[in-house]
Structure formats: structure tokens, C-alpha cells
Image (cartoon, rainbow, N blue to C red; front, side, top):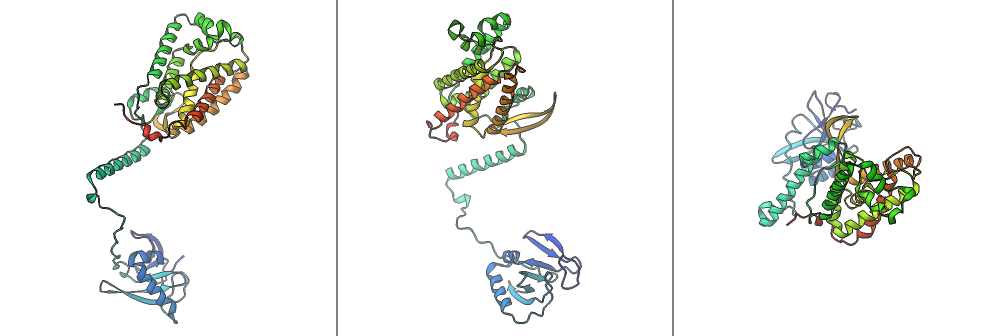
Amino acid sequence: MFTCPNCGSTLTRTQGKAGLFWSCNSCGGRAVGIGLLRRIIGTERVSAIWSRALTTADKEGRSCPICSRGMAEESVNLAGHLLKFGVCTRCEFAWFDTTEYESIQPPPKLKDPCEVDEKDLPQAAREALAIYKVRQMAEREREENPEPDTNWKIAPALLGLPVEMDSDPLTRIPLATFSIAAIIAVVSILAFFNLKNTVSQFGLIPDEAWRDGGITFLTSFFLHAGIFHLVSNLYFLITFGIHVENYLGRKRWLLLVLLSAIAGDLLHVMADPRGEIPCIGASGGISGLIAFYAFKFPHARLGFLLRFGFVFIPRWIQFPAWVAFILWILLQFLGALEQVSGFSNVSSLAHLGGTAVGILFWVVWRKIDSQPAVDLIKPIS
């Protein structure tokens, strides 16, 4: 607790425009630290004052508000005004009487030699700087008010699905992604008219995995158990598949999906205890795409609508892709434990098999493209 050397009142901690000081509400005095003093009257002046104060033999001025020892009386001429104050070199504080502190005019700010006036820049540089500032403003707005970039994304969010908060433009049309999605949609919808017989004939049955030359490893990929199963898988396939295809290209994308689907099916066949139950769905191949996306674009923002049970709250929560992937993969491990115990009808094992291939693909192909990911994001011409 600091005490006013004039009237003995307790000083109040105050935050001013220049910095922090302690003020007396009774007499108006101010106690100022050496750091703030340097800012308001200049470093050179403070150094000279401190040198004189250190060599002053007798310090019989007013008591220091901190240590109560005598302060050296000093003065400095500022723009024709003689400013008087006390200095305690031990506590590195200065004391100003009423109105003295307010009369201080800070030294003129020296122009930074590295600072450049925008008016002196070439037109191209000014335009680039303006674009950079707009992007900064957009980034701050995005952080303060997280919303997806298009309104249609609210629909999948209401189904509990993650959405990309920002969609990057593509350098190529994702023909493979759209083609596979279309084939899956057509085949699955046609199968719905006689789903039980279709699944029995074309689904992957672990006990009969190699029937008909193992063709069911492929046919089961295009079948789905219901509308939501189909819609959710198509959503994940398109949302993440278009960006992965944009990076890998069509042929490598197809190879990734094929190997991921096969790996998922093999893991399911080897570990699922219910060998007589058919397995269908594209989840294994899609899991490979999800894993590749998360490793290739770890900082992409994925958003979810906050909800409690079936009640949605109009508030978005968002995670970078790598965080969402970790949460998702933990759920898959838990699901796999339930699956091998016979308590789950969802093949988390197929998801894990596809994920392993997706990660392996990322390891293999990440060095092929030496350009940063940001250079790959260009609009379609």
C-alpha cells in the first residue's frame, strides 16, 4: 500500500493512456515508475536525472511513497516549463505534485525508418496490401462470429453431420468423386426395392468372403441399408473426396478408395465374430478419404451445430480437421471393441482398415507435390 508524501492518504492504482501510475485522490499527486517516466519525458532526460539523483549526497526532500526514505528533488525544462519532482533511486519512482504530471508533454514520436507511407508504394503493392488487410478483417470476423460460408450447410448440420466452415476453390472438376457418388446413389436406391435379397446376394458375408471370386468385396461397396446410411455416406464422400481428388488426381483417388475399401472389408472379415451377417456400405473407402483429408488439410475448420439430445441450439462449435479426426478415430476404436464383442451392427473395423490405408497414402504421396497447400487453391479457369 503506497502513501502520499504530502497528505498521508492511500494512493490509488490508476491506468492512464501512457501507462500505469498511482494517484492521490486528496491532493492530486502522482507516483510514477521509471519505465513510464521514460515514455513521457524521454529516455535521455531520465538517464541524466537519475545520474544527478544518484550523486546527490543529501536526500532531504519529501518521503518516498513506497519506502518512506527521502527523495532527491530534481527538475527538468520541458518546452519552457520547469518541471519539478522528487526521485527515489532505490524504488525507481518519481513523485509529481498536483498539475505537474498533467503538464508533461511527451516527446515527439520519431518516425520508424522501416515504416513506409502507403502513398509512396507502387499501385500493385498498395492493392496487395489492401487485399491483405481485407483478409485480416475477414479472419477476425470469422473467429468472432463463426458461421459456414453458405447457408445450405445448415441442412447437414441439422442431421448431426460436420460441415466445412470455409470451402476452398478447386483446381479441377472432381469427376471421380461425383461419378462414384452417382453410381452409389443409383445402385443403392434400386436395391431398396428388394433390399433383403440384394444384400444376401451381393453383400460381403465373412463366412463366404471369397464366393464368386470375391466379387462381393466390390459389390458391397455400392449397397446401403437405408436412406440415412446412404445420404450420410454420400455426404462424407463428396465433402472430403473433392478436396482429396483435387490434390491426388483422378487415378490416385480411385486407387485410394479401392484399397481403403478392400482393407476395411478384410479387417471386418478377419475380426467380426458374426460371420453369417452381410456387411454393406462405402464406409471403408470413405474412411480412407477422411484420414487423407485430415492429414493433408489439418487446419481446415469443421463446424457442428450445438445440440442437447434432439434439440439444436443456433450456435456453431468448430474444430480444426486434425482435432475432429482424433475424436472420430477414438470413437471408431470404441466401436470396434463393441463390434468384436457382438454388441454393434456398425463395422468400425472397416472404418479403421480404411483409415490405415488413408494414412499410408498420405505418407507416400505428401512429398510428390513440393508446393505448399495454399498454392494448390486456385479457382477453376
